[in-house]
Amino acid sequence: MIKVNYTYRILILGLSLFSSAITYAQTSFPVSPSIVQKINPSIHGLNLNSKAGVMFSSINYGDGLSAENNYLYGNMAFRDLNFSIGVDVNSFSLNQLGLKENSMRLSYAYNFRIGVDTYFIGGLDLGVTAQVLDPNALIFGDQINEQLGTIVGSSIDPLATIKPSTNYFEIGASGVVYNEKFMAGIHLAHLNSPNISFNKETVVEKEMAVILNGAVELDVNPYGRGILPQNSYFFGSFYGILHGETTRILASQELQMNNLSLGIMQSMISFGENSAMEMGLLTTISFDNFLFKFNYTFASKSDEFNAPSIVELGLRFNFDRFSRNSRGYYKRLSTNNL
Image (tube, rainbow, N blue to C red; front, side, top):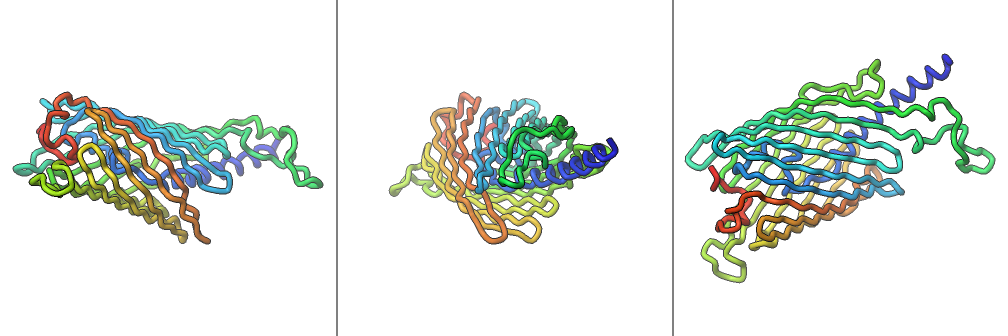
């Protein structure tokens, strides 16, 4: 029994460190420019628009390792009171390793006028995360046939019946300055440095993350001349994440042509001494109050680090019934509701 308890502690400590690595794995894949509220919840209050959407991501790390990420989001804007309430629900599954993580975050974003056509959004967010590891996905020593070099049968190790799990609470603060042409924001996530260990006797803190984001939008055909439609805009965005040993910088450039947007993205990610570059394609089609999104990120492999290939499919609905009649309907940075 003493041996089992000791082994259990070693396993739990390893799982806690593994959980930290999974936190990095989630940070390692891009966030679409159309769902920036995932990294900065103050974006839920942008232009005081009510909306809801979903994004499905299929992530392939190579060597048979894959993951799925499902993201549901929405917000209700209270225009007369200048604030929005947002909700983000995220589900991440690392299939081959049997790890599942589900999280939910509630956010409050308040709009302040700081100029003639410039606004500041201040936000607070509260979240809860639950992780569980399926022991059926683990391989124990008594399942390995050393003579044949194969894995056989099921384990009778006492640890094989234990289903480790953990949950923790998070606090964050964010802010965004924006007008019709630019946006700049910051999000301080995990301010309370929660303990993410599977064994609460061992403390493994989730480090605070600093996230910067920004965007610029320009009307490239204000007079409706040439081959581009009148409602044509260039939208450039970036964000940077500093979270422990993980650093990520992403930039994207998109051309909005009425209801069609085409673009590319570039990304650099480093984890400790390892780093990689990524490239991707961005596509958006809008129809009335609906927005359909397709993104593809190319896999990037090197001797140091393998960045995954990612396929993203998204759908968003805007509840503003007047948006379809507005000249700036296809414009992303707008203050027409304020």
